[in-house]
Image 1 (cartoon, rainbow over the protein chains, first blue to last red):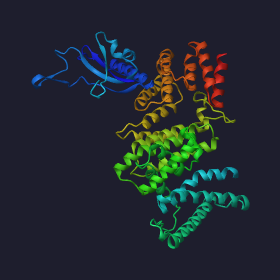
Image 2: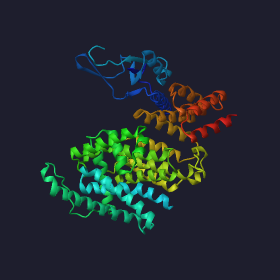
Image 3: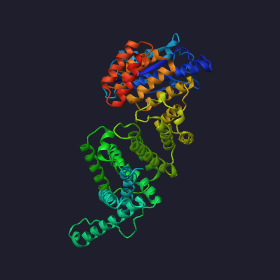
Length: 117
Length: 409
């Protein structure tokens, strides 16, 4: 079994949602992760806070970001165990982030750190 | 209590006290001698009480007998040391000057310190738990084997090696340093949690025995709470969890000893005092910074003390299960989480999630599927209950499933 990271990409991280909407998304996200955990496939994960974000560029230029010229931004990630990338994709499909048009999930296999992969 | 129940009862409550006090008195290297003296004490009780009748104060009788036997043992060993063993290098240093102290205070102190001695890092965790069950709780080898789903032989080997290790490492029976307490606490709590579960869920024993085991576990956890060095948030959380479950003891069985399911229980039989006690300790637990699995389980158990089904109740239970699964996966938690999902988000969503679990050798998996398919697709509900029935391991489980099948017609 391999480990895959499922990265939640938001088209526009600057959008403000109502507290009720936030609460709804939070529940859906927790239920989604709960479902993966119930199959014993959850490894770890976290949300990433949009406020107070910075982007560090070439020559150590720091900007308030991640918004601005970078259009897409990462809202969080989880790491899962899966038999194949297709199975990892099935887990990713359940993520409530995908309810937002333009948002995407990126699925990447975790490097093993053995110098080969 | 009936006379024939008295000795087994006393064995469960007093064997470990005598063993622990003697072990602390003579040192951990004499752990087997301490066990032997405690066993001999009960043997004498069985012989003497059958013949002479019950003494006025059976516990005091046991303590006096144990003290006398210990003195005799010590004398024999001393004699051995003086007359014979000088020719050996390793002389058994046994202190016998002080009186063996079987006061309540010394029993508590000894047990508390023994808990931490047993949970020494040199001993593998499984062996720690086996030894805790043996020494602190007076479990028989067979009972330990049941709790671990393993053979008596394996348990015996584990116990032997663990005792050997304690002897070789010369583990002192004392309070470890504060950072050491942190390290050993999780094993201590796991042992007590297992002990409680053995009492609460095991099929093999009668109700009185099982309630005794639960009470013992609760008493040991309470020892940790009473001592300021060990009064941690997760200890309070575990105690709260035990209180909430124990509050339903009287309501769980009918007169013929059959299991009554939670939703069919008469809630007027729930012990309100224990629920209040549990709530108080859960509140204490929430003051800490650490969120342990016991916090989450206690939270779930708390919501179950409120009989009325509300959306808030099941939503809270579902989120607690979601969190719990992230800390620790087990098939049973996964199944309970999916049941909560059906209550909070509806059966259709739960069916989709349940079908993904694929716990094909687990009777409770098919029982859950049967439950959530009921009224959605009764043919499938029936099929799943039938599979559950075939896989069920106990009579009472089969009985409950049969009832469900009958209801489906």
